[in-house]
Structure formats: structure tokens, C-alpha cells
Image 1 (cartoon, rainbow, N blue to C red):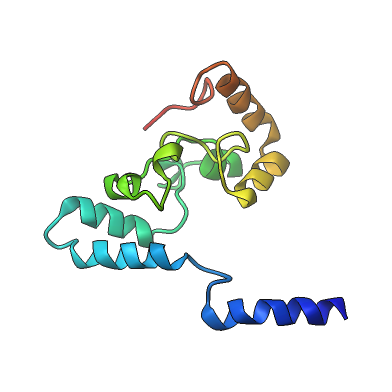
Image 2: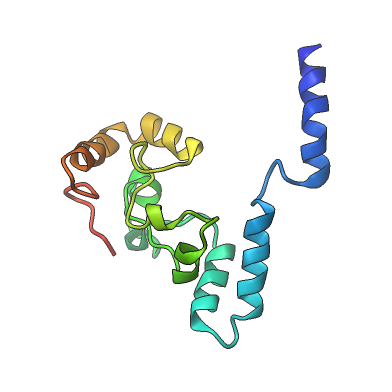
Length: 141
């Protein structure tokens, strides 16, 4: 009976498409930026970021030998100017932060960083408590 209740409660999300994928305000902002991208380099950067998926460490993007933590979690992220200026995106407070549990607001990355990158993130989070934005081996790009 519990499974049936969960299925019924999830139905509106499945029908509206809001259970998975970005919220409506994100898709609307991305559509606006993509429409203006031909004439505006900031809008092009924002539009590109909308469609590139989760960020990976630039040092690992070209096939460099990186482990999961280096590639996906323990690197400072950078967001396009229009993303940082959009109040609903709240990415301005994440600029230069990692996906470690002490930096991220995302529960998925908080769990992944705790389970799979505990040692690396412990260093980052320890340094964050001491006032450093990132760990000793993390370079802001």
C-alpha cells in the first residue's frame, strides 16, 4: 500500500515534468539567454552553461588522468556572469566553491562527496573552517 501512495503522490510531478529536470525559472532564463546569445557574449556564456551539463574540472576535461573526486567534486567552480547576477539561481554564493559537503547546497553532491571523496573533502572543509575558500591543493581557475 505504501508504494501505491508514493506513486499517486509522484503522479503530478511526472505529468508536469517538474520531478526531474530544471525548475521553470531556469528553463525560462536559459531560453532568454540563448535567444540573445548571437549579439551578447555574456548571454552566449550563460546559454552554453545551460546546455553543457554538470561542470567538470577544466584540468580533467581534455582526457587528463583524473579520479572521480578531482574531476567532479574537489575543484572550485565558476559560473557565467549572468548566472551569478540572477538572484533565483543563487550561484553567486557558490562561485569558487567545491562540491564538497561544506561548500555545496546540493544534497546529492553532499552525499557523494561524503561517501566517495571523504579524505579530499575533509581537507577542503578543514581549510574552509580556517578561513580559506578552498583546500591547499585546489587552484582557483
